Image 1: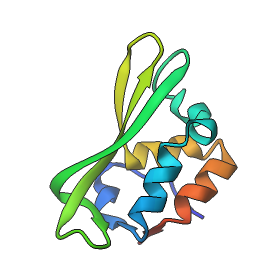
Image 2 (image 1 turned 90 degrees about the horizontal axis):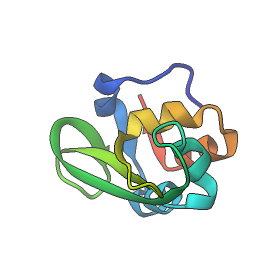
Image 3 (image 1 turned 90 degrees about the vertical axis):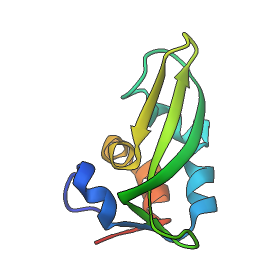
Image 4 (image 1 turned 180 degrees about the vertical axis):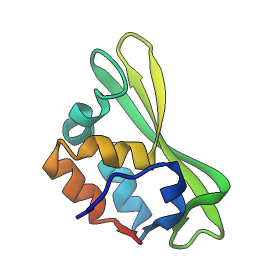
Length: 109
């Protein structure tokens, strides 16, 4: 497990070993809704993993170059928040099962 809290510059030290598994974990509302309540109020109605090319982003096995990986979180009230992977990992520290499932898919240098 992590021994420190992450910040934006740490994105480049993250390697996603299994993107499809990570995507399934991050989009599993039963598991992740308690984590996502750190970002939006009310019921979490959806979570969608997105990414775009970024020179300081995470490394994803099978994807060339770095990517900024984030989760678009939507609440029932229509509020949306884009949470970078490092923010999701930090918020998951209070939810050991979610954190464990996320970290199964990653390596952090």
